[in-house]
Length: 145
Image (cartoon, rainbow, N blue to C red; front, side):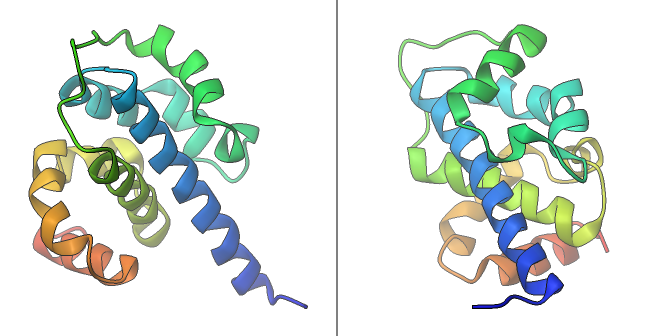
Protein backbone atom coordinates (compact mmCIF):
# COMPACT_ATOMS: atom_id res chain seq x y z
CA UNK A 1 0.00 0.00 0.00
CA UNK A 2 1.31 3.45 -0.87
CA UNK A 3 0.55 6.59 1.08
CA UNK A 4 0.50 10.15 -0.12
CA UNK A 5 2.61 12.48 2.02
CA UNK A 6 -0.60 14.00 3.45
CA UNK A 7 -1.97 10.57 4.42
CA UNK A 8 1.34 9.54 5.96
CA UNK A 9 1.57 12.82 7.78
CA UNK A 10 -1.96 12.39 9.20
CA UNK A 11 -1.16 8.82 10.25
CA UNK A 12 1.98 9.98 12.06
CA UNK A 13 0.06 12.83 13.70
CA UNK A 14 -2.52 10.33 14.98
CA UNK A 15 0.23 8.21 16.53
CA UNK A 16 1.66 11.31 18.24
CA UNK A 17 -1.82 12.24 19.50
CA UNK A 18 -2.19 8.71 20.86
CA UNK A 19 1.19 8.97 22.59
CA UNK A 20 0.12 12.13 24.39
CA UNK A 21 -3.19 10.48 25.31
CA UNK A 22 -1.20 7.56 26.73
CA UNK A 23 0.99 9.97 28.75
CA UNK A 24 -2.04 11.65 30.31
CA UNK A 25 -3.75 8.32 31.02
CA UNK A 26 -0.61 6.82 32.54
CA UNK A 27 0.03 9.85 34.78
CA UNK A 28 -3.57 9.65 35.98
CA UNK A 29 -3.35 5.91 36.66
CA UNK A 30 -0.13 6.47 38.62
CA UNK A 31 -2.08 8.86 40.84
CA UNK A 32 -0.61 12.21 39.84
CA UNK A 33 -2.74 15.25 40.54
CA UNK A 34 -4.02 15.84 37.03
CA UNK A 35 -5.38 19.30 37.89
CA UNK A 36 -1.71 20.28 38.30
CA UNK A 37 -0.11 17.81 35.87
CA UNK A 38 -1.98 18.84 32.72
CA UNK A 39 -1.24 22.59 32.77
CA UNK A 40 2.33 22.01 33.98
CA UNK A 41 2.93 19.46 31.22
CA UNK A 42 1.43 21.68 28.51
CA UNK A 43 3.70 24.56 29.59
CA UNK A 44 6.78 22.40 30.18
CA UNK A 45 10.07 22.52 28.32
CA UNK A 46 9.60 18.81 27.63
CA UNK A 47 6.34 19.49 25.81
CA UNK A 48 7.82 22.42 23.91
CA UNK A 49 10.94 20.60 22.71
CA UNK A 50 9.63 17.04 22.48
CA UNK A 51 6.00 17.34 21.38
CA UNK A 52 5.66 20.82 19.80
CA UNK A 53 8.28 19.96 17.21
CA UNK A 54 8.64 18.37 13.81
CA UNK A 55 10.34 15.26 15.21
CA UNK A 56 11.28 13.82 18.56
CA UNK A 57 11.69 10.18 19.58
CA UNK A 58 9.40 10.92 22.54
CA UNK A 59 6.49 11.45 20.14
CA UNK A 60 6.29 7.69 19.69
CA UNK A 61 7.75 6.51 22.99
CA UNK A 62 6.16 4.60 25.84
CA UNK A 63 4.32 6.87 28.28
CA UNK A 64 6.43 5.66 31.21
CA UNK A 65 9.61 6.64 29.36
CA UNK A 66 8.19 10.10 28.68
CA UNK A 67 7.14 10.48 32.31
CA UNK A 68 10.72 9.73 33.41
CA UNK A 69 11.69 12.99 31.69
CA UNK A 70 8.52 15.02 32.37
CA UNK A 71 8.04 14.45 36.10
CA UNK A 72 11.41 15.79 37.34
CA UNK A 73 10.73 19.01 35.43
CA UNK A 74 7.16 19.66 36.56
CA UNK A 75 7.22 18.03 40.02
CA UNK A 76 3.50 17.45 40.63
CA UNK A 77 2.15 15.70 43.72
CA UNK A 78 0.51 12.31 43.84
CA UNK A 79 -2.97 11.75 45.20
CA UNK A 80 -4.15 8.71 47.18
CA UNK A 81 -6.05 7.56 44.08
CA UNK A 82 -6.81 8.86 40.58
CA UNK A 83 -9.58 11.47 40.42
CA UNK A 84 -10.55 10.96 36.79
CA UNK A 85 -11.57 8.06 34.59
CA UNK A 86 -8.70 6.90 32.36
CA UNK A 87 -10.64 7.32 29.10
CA UNK A 88 -11.28 11.00 29.85
CA UNK A 89 -7.59 11.71 30.41
CA UNK A 90 -6.59 9.79 27.29
CA UNK A 91 -9.12 11.76 25.19
CA UNK A 92 -7.99 15.09 26.65
CA UNK A 93 -4.33 14.37 25.91
CA UNK A 94 -5.20 13.23 22.39
CA UNK A 95 -7.36 16.28 21.64
CA UNK A 96 -4.82 18.76 23.03
CA UNK A 97 -2.23 17.32 20.62
CA UNK A 98 -4.68 17.36 17.72
CA UNK A 99 -5.47 21.01 18.50
CA UNK A 100 -1.73 21.68 18.20
CA UNK A 101 -1.59 20.04 14.76
CA UNK A 102 -4.77 21.58 13.41
CA UNK A 103 -4.34 25.11 14.74
CA UNK A 104 -0.54 25.42 14.55
CA UNK A 105 -0.47 26.96 18.03
CA UNK A 106 1.87 25.95 20.85
CA UNK A 107 0.70 23.77 23.70
CA UNK A 108 1.35 26.74 25.97
CA UNK A 109 -1.08 28.88 23.95
CA UNK A 110 -3.66 26.11 23.77
CA UNK A 111 -3.74 25.43 27.52
CA UNK A 112 -4.21 29.16 28.15
CA UNK A 113 -7.25 29.24 25.84
CA UNK A 114 -8.66 25.81 26.70
CA UNK A 115 -7.88 25.00 30.34
CA UNK A 116 -8.02 21.46 31.68
CA UNK A 117 -11.33 22.13 33.46
CA UNK A 118 -12.88 23.17 30.12
CA UNK A 119 -11.67 19.94 28.52
CA UNK A 120 -13.31 17.97 31.35
CA UNK A 121 -16.58 19.71 30.49
CA UNK A 122 -16.14 18.99 26.75
CA UNK A 123 -15.32 15.31 27.29
CA UNK A 124 -18.80 13.78 27.83
CA UNK A 125 -20.32 15.29 24.68
CA UNK A 126 -17.36 15.57 22.34
CA UNK A 127 -15.72 12.22 23.07
CA UNK A 128 -18.55 10.61 21.10
CA UNK A 129 -17.94 12.55 17.87
CA UNK A 130 -15.17 12.46 15.27
CA UNK A 131 -11.97 13.91 16.71
CA UNK A 132 -11.71 16.54 13.97
CA UNK A 133 -15.27 17.65 14.68
CA UNK A 134 -14.38 17.93 18.38
CA UNK A 135 -11.36 20.10 17.52
CA UNK A 136 -13.50 22.30 15.29
CA UNK A 137 -16.14 22.79 18.00
CA UNK A 138 -13.56 23.53 20.70
CA UNK A 139 -11.58 25.92 18.50
CA UNK A 140 -14.69 27.85 17.45
CA UNK A 141 -16.04 27.92 21.00
CA UNK A 142 -12.73 29.21 22.37
CA UNK A 143 -12.08 31.53 19.39
CA UNK A 144 -8.85 29.75 18.52
CA UNK A 145 -9.07 30.01 14.74
